[in-house]
Length: 185
Image 1 (cartoon, rainbow, N blue to C red):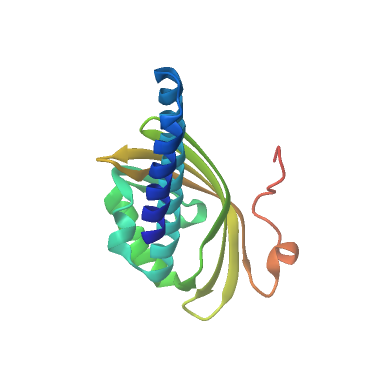
Image 2: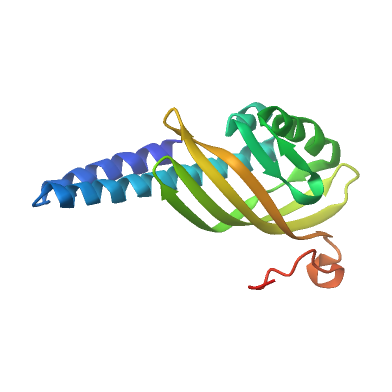
């Protein structure tokens, strides 16, 4: 949280300096909008990072707080969950029943902001260990919708598009993919 605060403070200082050089209100308004969009993208990036961190550390209360009350999550082979209560139950009860350790990694994000709503796409990779000590790999892409609620970004919808879920020893090449991630597939 400290890094986010520092980034936002620096952004605010730079914005003030840039705005001071604006020659008219249209330029200033455009710059304010650009800065607001960059701040929203950064806040959504932190939201996604917190999702991964809370899932991996088992902090289900904080995980649940990242979602709107009417959020929907489609985790493919791990189920479809409608509403914050069902999503919370998935994280609190089902993940620990099957997974002993997960290490979510997300990258190559694409986030588009439109006022108080946004969409995002993120590739994910998750090395994991099951409760019976089997290691595996999960990979795919998240498709997400976000909404700003009381000044805070939340998940509205999360869809996990699975590319593979395979034993560590076999890997995705030997075991095969659930879905080919190549463009057009």
